[in-house]
Length: 132
Image (tube, rainbow, N blue to C red):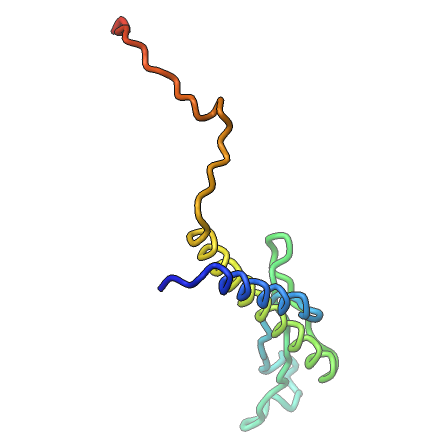
């Protein structure tokens, strides 16, 4: 399906506008952990006890290393969830922007911008080379 160039440019502008409206963001994934500790007299050792947790953690890569952050309060968790969601929205919009730009590049007509010197082609020599 070929879309008119002005429509594609409008779509690109809309995506750029949405990217400009994004708020705070950070990369990573939020996961939940829990379990039992190693203390013999702890409540988590009793049968039927759900154990400790849940603990929510943000895991991401920084400089090739995995970094994990634990949230102290539900408010900190909610803030991080919104920031991660905003990052995922950024990635989606960025992918859409690249796709629209590729369609624009294919739809835009080729313009002759070569100089006269660039247009002159080198003529092949009529002489045969010595095959050594």
